[in-house]
Image 1: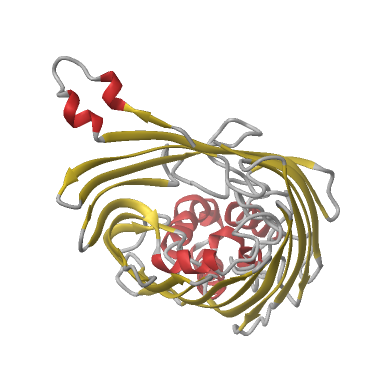
Image 2: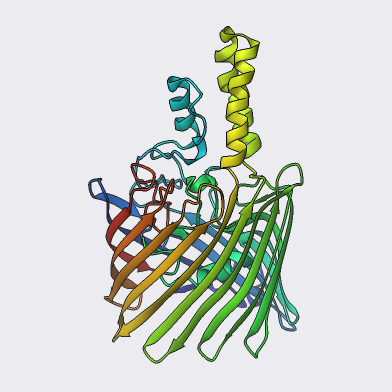
Length: 423
């Protein structure tokens, strides 16, 4: 990655001396390939191994051990040129509408389409320009203070423990996102409107604390959010423990996650292990679901009479309140083995669903990276998910969730072949 030093561009109104200590770096990842999922034709995808992106980051040396820093990073979908990826397949998800069979068939189909649209938008619902990262901060001798939209402490530990580095169909996240799809986040990946403190000691110990108020969290729907992590990165170890805790618009506890794990590098081997607990009794999206019914469905039911309309609403509200909850624990073990410049990856992950539906899932994955250079590689990954009961997990990518299997309990299978270039 090359730096553009702004000192060479100094104008008459800006001191050259100050600019000589300032640098801005343009960087990015271009990643695209083909993905085969069970029962579907090959599909051209963006962000198989790493989400495709374009970023700008920089720093200014302020002296006395202090630096000003910033980072703006935008999502780029190479298959469409847009910034809002869709689910990988167009299968219908059924989990959020469990128990709603009392609704008239046409109405039930409409509700399913609205809640879990086939092939609908999956990430960046706000269509934000810099949804991946938008941050400014100060680095001091006592740690860094950062403000903006950033990765959460808990998710950073989750990513460090993932054998497939949160990419391809082998990523641990393929089975932790909730079988309701991306509407049921398994972890707050980022939080907007956040204030973060980070520190890294020479011994390898480090930590971070993040707090945020109204309008925070991944969807920007939290009343408040906080997270913290303790890490150790030295002597081949990259391990940590992290916790995230969000609160819904009314202030009730929403998604809470605790993650522990990481990796250990030894000769040509790198071993990974992770544990992830997720609970959510009050989904931040629940008020949106109910408001959608009242605004779009209720007017169409007026002709049925108040009693019938109220009964159908009760069916919807009671079941969506239950179906949007989460209670699960997940485990992941894996390893990477280097063969020269290349590597083999293998992992197994288990999502143990503790809700009454008992919709467990087990992921097996095998991958290979062939590095053409330090910045360009070709990857191939095969993944298999054994779904139980009402689970519909389908292998995902780094850039988008995998969508759903055609029917609940059906196994999810995928093969990916792609190329990644980092610049």
